Image (cartoon, rainbow, N blue to C red; front, top):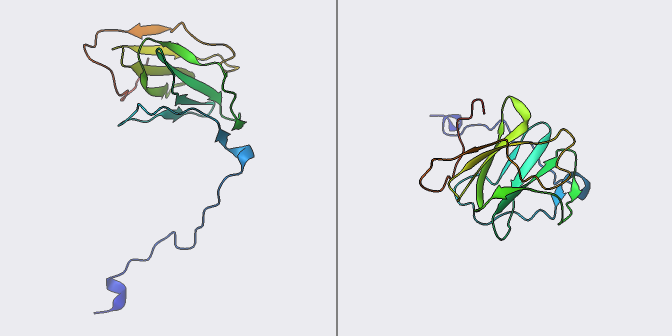
Length: 144
């Protein structure tokens, strides 16, 4: 028996990571602590959406993908749920359409302007009601 049969060579043996600089990372984003088993962010080629910590309802940030560095604490948010936002997911066919679900038993579909969120978005394109318990996860998106 040869020693090679018990060990498998890794393809990534000589790959080393390098941390990003402050200019190429996001800083000061108040990430939520209430999301336990889902994702707290979602990205597409134009934007990144992050569920944030807030009081009195739920909201999330939508940042242009090239907007790196320090995020202003007063940055406009997408806020329209009466409970905490638990998950967000982008439409795979439309980079300016996002869905959010919340503890208020609703799912909301939002249209993000081409220039990004310049002021708080409070009016959703569509509100899906009918759940009897909180909606914790958005999966299997097709066409919203």
